[in-house]
Length: 454
Ligand SMILES: *Cc1c(COP(=O)(O)O)cnc(C)c1O
Image (cartoon, rainbow, N blue to C red; front, side, top):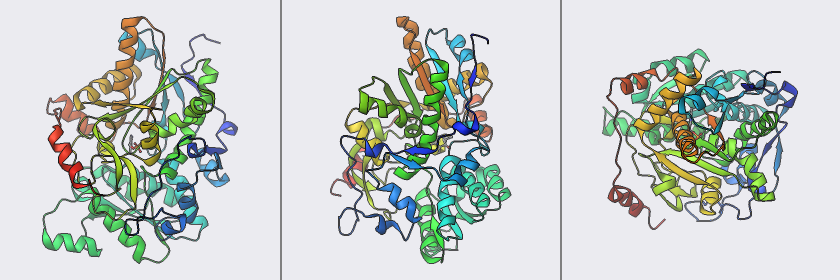
């Protein structure tokens, strides 16, 4: 056997049989989501009208560390899992670093990102509970694409509300959803009360995630046998993503190394938690010293500059109140090209972990992220999603520190997706049309003031 093994792959029978629920092991449990009207702690039953029941129970489960992955979901994971753990020799060489860099390649999933890991699970539980229709919103379209395929697999009808501006500007993700058989509607639309109201007030409105969420939730509440689904932020979504870290743990063992630091890009926290939590288990239970670094965009810095407090999960204020690091649900992030990272808050688990100093966060400017993405593409032959470029940039920073100190640290990052449907963004970068966004303290404070008394 060559001494320089490039990729580490697990056989199908070693695809995890359980997801890891870190809530069970956390010394300080996340504070409960609250009913916004009564301010009482939410019970799973409160969420039953919106989500599949099993997902509601998983959301609030703080006792079971291991939750069995249904056989039908594992069967579908086999279509693309295990995903490779790759030693980034090319990137190491390009940087001239003594660090050992590994990445977990979630871009090999049929839809090109990690999101399918949770979409399959959510569609499965809906089917099991007799649901016939699922709905959701999507911005750039990655979650919508994953849900569309997962719905088809389990024989459900999917209705996706896509923010109007993305619907028109990102036609290929819409075609992907439609190819998988989903109905895609540009939001705001005339098909819901919420959409009609907005169009009546402002006929030219180009839409927002907040409006699309309102439309999708309204459809779920008014259609029999229809449930709403979400692709990030919530704890059950991150739970499903722990297949990433559980596989990576075994694969790092195959490589004969253990990571000194683990890095993920950060939108709502699902791919970051997915790769980190199985390793963090050893930090919590055995005191293992590993750094966990979330890489967020400088234009949407909830972890590095936001505030920990109760806030709504959506712009419209329909969701329960969540205890999280937030920039305020009214915060409107700049229109950066990593659409999947433009969310105002962080999931409740990650928020508690950051508060307890179990993890850290860095913010990355748009130009630095694309520069790192291009370097990675040229060194490893994979064009990363603009979101994933943030993780790569953070890994490059750490690898460069190793170059200065001469330390052979082991760096593991998650490649959450490929960028082959985001080439319009690369075009903009290569043409020199992209810029960095400096966010002033006053702008952040203004939105935080608005949610001060919640
Ligand atoms: C959605 C998305 C993200 C951000 O979501 P998280 O829940 O923070 O993981 C990151 N990368 C890609 C490729 C995505 O599609």
